[in-house]
Image (cartoon, rainbow, N blue to C red; front, side, top):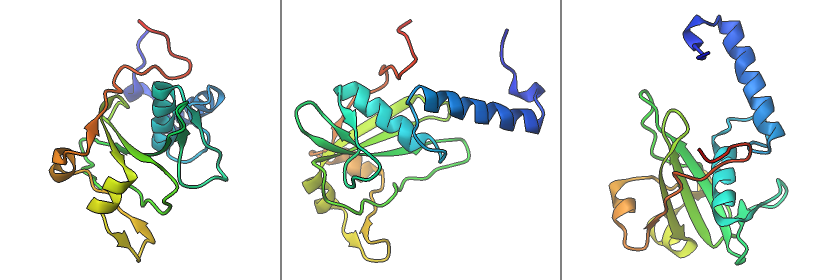
Length: 163
């Protein structure tokens, strides 16, 4: 049986969304009731590196790798109607690397970029208005020799099995 969202009422779709969010929280993929994109990106990165996710009370980094690297994770989701390129501000310097995870509309990882904190600080000035650095995913960023592409497209999340 194929799920057809077009056959569902708006209330049914909202109930489906709520049930999906509960199931993802139960599987420890997401941890809040906010937009799940950041939590999903953190889960992907933690799984890829075999790391642990940081707590809500600690600032600066989101994933700690077994090698002791502190990774700040930021995410974007591209859709047919959204062409956003800027990430949420980085307000803390307590991280070693920034890893940007880009999803398509169906939450498939299409791109991931890893750069050191020094590279972030070289490329993006501190913005006093937001009290942080606003990273934009552009051709200039992708072309920088200190930015490394990481393949996260086949990372399995909690509750998934290899096909």
